[in-house]
Amino acid sequence: MQETSKKIRVFSGVQPTGNLHLGNYLGAIKRFVALQDEHECLYCVVDLHAITVFQDPDELTHNTREVTAAFIAAGIDPTRQIIFNQSQVSGHAELAWIFNCVARLGWLNRMTQFKEKAGKDREKASAGLYVYPNLMAADILLYHATHVPVGEDQKQHLELARDIAQKFNNDFAKTIARADYADDFFPLPEPLIAGPATRVMSFRDGAKKMSKSDPSDLSRINLTDDQDAIAKKIRKAKTDPEPLPSEVEGLEARPEADNLIGIYAALAGTDKASVLGDYGGATFSTLKEALAELATAKLTPIGDEMRRLMADPEEIDRILADGAGRAHTIADPILAKTKDIIGFIRS
View 1 (cartoon, helix red, strand yellow):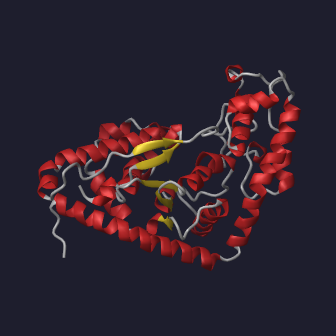
View 2 (cartoon, one colour; view 1 turned 90 degrees about the vertical axis):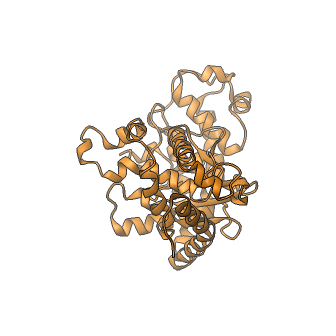
View 3 (cartoon, helix red, strand yellow; view 1 turned 135 degrees about the horizontal axis):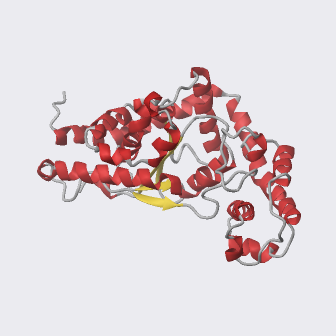
């Protein structure tokens, strides 16, 4: 097998849709920082995914830079790992078309996120929104990535990527064998499930995911919020009237309590049981004060650094261009071999 298929290589992406918040940080970016010490990583601002729904061009440019700034401010080193925006590497779109011809309609019809995002009037949804799981598979497999950090809501898409990889390998097994691959050409990527607070919920409703689209700004902590705003939002977070439980099992059917404990655990780098060991039996006000202190200490420096980076857009663009060049170095040979396997004639 080729060396690229043997490496432990991590790929993940974040959409540049604006207002990065605590959920993005705990559910993805914080995990990215830890992974860079263990693996070869590619971190992508997935601007092609963003345009499955209309994006104002100026906002798309700003948001792409903002996600890049968040990656760097949180601690990802662009000299050690690859940070780039998707549209600068054309192989993503090329491989996505190939996968459009590999994936089956029945597979796409089972994708629950399309149903949620398209809403009731699916006839008005873009074709891109329907087939974007194939683009997601291309994002991963273009680099022969072996692992993808995902939340629970993305596991279905990773399973589709595995199905696509397996079908491609099966469809072209004879050609792959002739190309001297001892095993399948595309690896079957594995999920990397993060620890506590992989799914951060709204401060206004513990049953809903924290979201930039929530009309209430009090429902989320934005990464660019200052110290006072962070503390205010935590103090105003919805709770229930009971004291905090002493055991994790006591968080069942208490979504707001579970959310705040999970956030504290993730920011502190511990688990829910340890947090409840310290705060079990305490009032929510006690926990909120401690969480406000912890959150401001962890998040305020990130927001400050993001603002500093955003003041120099040319430097951000330079980092993205450098990352795209390094991404091409990995992707181009894999895409070329993919075309050879299919039977395309190349110059």
